[in-house]
Length: 567
Image (tube, rainbow, N blue to C red; front, side, top):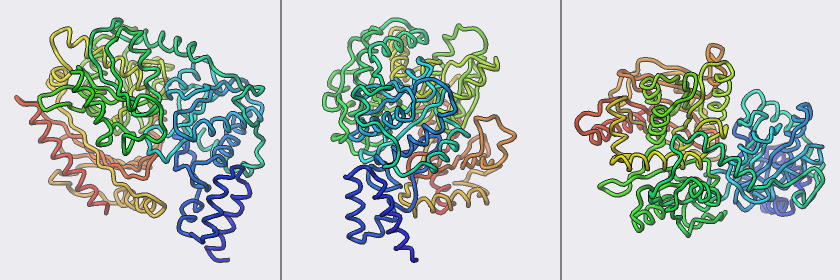
């Protein structure tokens, strides 16, 4: 039997097992048209379930996000949970077009399997689901969201019984159960599960919010609001409903939202890519900031777990990097720490080493984990349980932050409020965020970070990325853009000598002479290879100029790295 025949048979079997007439029709048309290239993309593999769950374009096929994939994924999750005892599963979803349907299928499979489900009946920020899972002592939680991915995508994110995202070996156990699941049409499922089905009960949003707000108050060093003028956007996501209420309850009554982007809209009509890191995504909120003469510009991504900030400068709005936001918040929180024990701050390995210097200034403990808030949260839980620190703050350079133990995942809502607190306090003291950053560079040393993402979509692109990782792991360059490479670490090996939050992973680190570094890894959620460069330096008399020169050097190193690995 040839490859085309194999693909045709696999597609026919999938169609027969798909309960959704829309995606069945898509695949049947591709079969009828003998579009083997497209069928190869859709049926040439499966969406791989891992610590980030699954994400992909919403289309028919085993390698896409659709009802059949969601149903089989939930069947695997339900099987995994069968031995986990009592406790509800919390389910939430974002504002994308397919999210409610996927959430209802998730709930229907879980209650048919005998699990109790507590669900949010309307779109909700991801941090609220994570918080509800902890508050209710859930055995697991599911959020249907593609976060900041393109409009065509959706995803399925799983939290463990500790209310943090799953980590190995849980992901592998769930993946094995998914692989063993029957065709989706044969998975027991309760239809219309959100409409009062036995075993599924809606959560009271106001009650969850009030508990969330109360806990956020306990981690705010500043307990008052201010007259600070803030321009805000949720980028067509689910953040505004909660953020507006959180800001008002905290005493901020001068927060203005971009009207065109205020409400959830799965088409994301005003942006090309609903990620605040992408060029153009914050144009409208900066325009609003200009009109209202804002003191601060803030954005959450569509599921409100990330935070972006822009501050005024002589040249217009200056977007802070994820690392700058992270070290500023860590420094401000540690300066005001008055708890018992040693304060603990954590960032991911691809985030700036500058956090270690900030921790040293305040006598705090610093830890580094693999990429992903699942690792930051689990490291915090482990270290606190061992009496080795009290968790204060964690961050990732990709605009992810969490303050204290309220949410065991990134939380763009409470982080935005705490950043506003910092900016308000600085303004009242006659200072600014920009001046605070300069002061921090002089106290802890100037660090710059840059990232180069090389996009390689499809199965061929995946093979290119894997080949590049093999090359950089096998042979290191003697120098990169004139900077000598003095050592390397391949994180695909040696995990037995590291803590559990630094397990084996496809990541290679190159050490540069003078203390800088280069990290190379594939993205966990997108078809990209990412190259990170961090360089230390001195702020000097003009820190902006020093920062620019150091950043230019880092960008040359990133480009040289991409060239060395053939991308």
